[in-house]
View 1 (cartoon, one colour):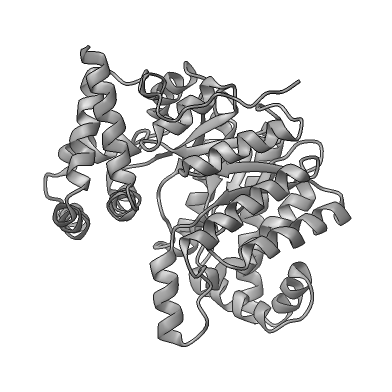
View 2 (cartoon, rainbow, N blue to C red):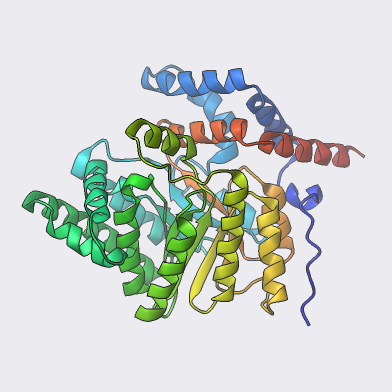
Length: 409
């Protein structure tokens, strides 16, 4: 008979066992800096400019925020990080951290080749079961925006609206979109052949529908014998729980397994500002309680339909992670069920990741890589996120301080 696990996210010995004293103290210094809003705002404003002007700041970035949140500048440099994590039964989701699109079709084709290179590399590493992609790295933003707007004018389910919208594109747009479809299919096919999961990141709400539709079509094609393609649902959107219910129903009807990566979300202020500016209802939940409620309802729905859904719990919320472990065992499933995986960003919430791993859960770190100049946007989001998340930096600091004191005794 299964019993509830004794998982404590306060166990710092497990959380930081993989970090040396030196790295732990560097992390303390970094998170201390992140508590200073003035420093964070100045860094966000000046770092991209300093990189653009080629000022000698890369060494400082590399030894501080880059080392904390990024796996390396090249794919090969991620190997040592992945191997270290693997010693503690923590897997890796590889993310090519370059946010492309500035170089047009050539840039999209280059990003496709990089994603394929990531898949081929991951297939040689037993500790890297997943990689992630952003469709905005493969498609022109304005094209996605146009298809999204056309889909909103149609009636029917997601795929019906998608097909109707495509008929209204110009000949040039149809040809352009076909190239996007071919890029995504090429990546999905490689993931299928190499048995590497492909996680499709969420985007802004006003371009999300074509991403949902394209990802759904890839799931229908590839998610049968194994689950390869995962869509990402941002639960701070008030419509995502109903979207999940519809996606699940479609998967059952069309006989494929739904891949669902459940997150809270990353674009809240941007979404609210745009809705206010353009005069439409905000897609964002009215408060955090509503987001938390829908998040837990979403993962509960997935567990109740575990044969038809492969779930990735991508969360830094301690309660949500414990809630999933409790629900699994209460409903008679093992913590390492093949359709349930947990994940946190590299450099954050080690207390969750490593204690879940210690309890026997399937868990990973989301590990970006890329040249410093290209991953600066990602790093600036991490800095901003840690300074603005209620209590996040304080929680990280208190756990690090606790472990430093424990080691000293």
